[in-house]
Image (cartoon, rainbow, N blue to C red):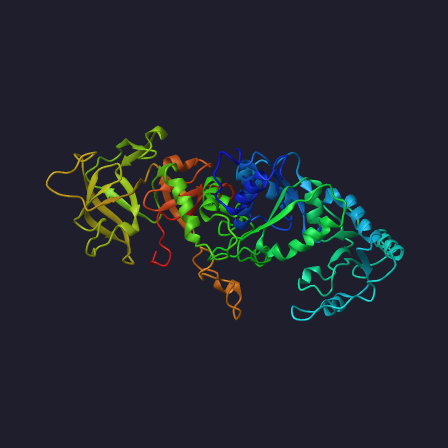
Length: 558
């Protein structure tokens, strides 16, 4: 899609359109999504993916997938594979082969030597503590390192010795020579290379020095011909360093860095370090736990790529901070699923119902729509029999005012079936209700009864022709709007104890014996539920995860 055929809907598109109008982009617009392979992607990354790939699509350009893999001690192939899967699942296709910053390690090292030869970088032997002391503060300028004025040839030899493994971790670093008095601390002679004896998942043991992110990123962008390097606002103070690296090396082009506000979502943690802690300490069951804000966790919970893209479009792109209500994310999945999720009935907490006037051994097949507003989705069959299950929460012995479900001597319609009236309550020895004996009205299939009015409509399944399913009722992982906002408490102290409620013994329509795995179901009157292949295989029966409730009931006494 050309810039002329689409009105800009965010400030980045406006900036690019203005640049095109000035003739600054004779070629195509090229963006990149550059994750570090040190964890799983989360909902904040989804915003960046949609933005970078979306900008490329809007302007008929390309978007690269590049792993900024400069920290081998925290990276591994598992994260790389998961990230590629997430990007593809969201519906995007990167240009050409996957790129890695490590693809450019030889060139990056060459640019480091170029800076040294031009007097723009030096090898420093200050310890980490000494370097912090020399750096100064926001109120006071830094001091020059005593090694800042080494001769060029000495710096060059030391850098080569670092590369060749003649020094140990932490003994020497390569630093840019910029300005120790700069009000921007990022420009106070930042580290460009450090010594790390660690095998790299792409390059093995070839290197024992690794470039820093702020050095690697702009050069990688330039080598790939990136036109617009889109970053979150925490990199705004790094932009002068990004530009300095490009200005002082012989890179083939000059990408432009543009910052936008990162996604802050209430009731949610998106720090990869803290998400890893949730996993490592067993607060959740892995990176793809359906309570996690990771893309893989949300996928397993039942979120669709369409809903995440809709959400990212809803929140927009700007430079202002602020926090987005997680209710917007839940609204997006409800909006997506309402029009296309197949309907089904599932009784979460079964209560046995015997229709005393229905012949024993007899059954009949009833036909219900897969989706009441979408006839093209077809029909489904359910079995009506003498013994049924309804949900325990749909029956009370002493109904409150305006009760719209079943009670003694009151009638309800069973969804898609007949009207029945409760005649007797059966208890076990402990006094718990174990069965309802009811009468059905055979003249009420598809028509209203004569002389009385049903109290409401409830869902049900046949006892004989239903399937045992496991149900995971997932809810928000944290019960505090800002779980990381209180300095006096640990964010894990705000984990919602009701974030997972497991129900055993639930019964679903017989069609759920082999659930579809591409879309969640709408369980009527309950919410949207998605087939969990991982748990189903482990338990030997269908297990479904609640994606979201039918309506926003948070804090309303669900």
